Length: 186
Picture (cartoon, rainbow, N blue to C red):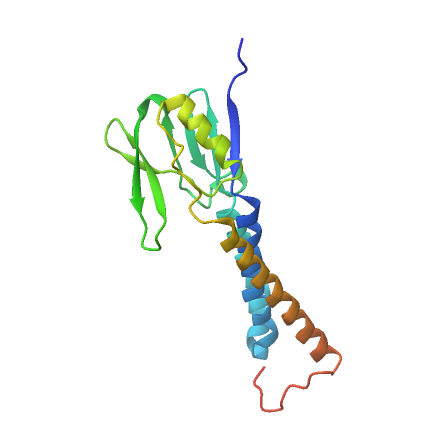
């Protein structure tokens, strides 16, 4: 008896950590540079924003013997109420659509001509595609990730570099090695 298919795919860790790093690199300096009246508000808003970013990046794709579903885990599903599900026998075609940035996204077209965007930024993406091919009979060999990994690796490196420089400046200001001019409003 074959084992029942039940697998969950999350957003690729490279993409998840890159976007979290970019958020931190862009947001953490704001409370430090803000005028005194805004510092407390920005320190309070930063963790709320981080929680929202984490919620958006928690999207997951579940596949089982019946079909595919896309959604968020219970801890944030009440906040982000988007998602979809399809039975395997509803999926009839994969439709490629070119993006304005030169990439290609794919839509799963259903028997009633509905369309759902195929997730392309998943961990174990090749395994995900093989399940779709096995369950629907549609060829997935030409489907690639939406963005090549080197773009996220570069962005991650830039974000980490920004965090290092921002930390060095904060330490320098804290120890008096860097002096902020008296006329500076922060």
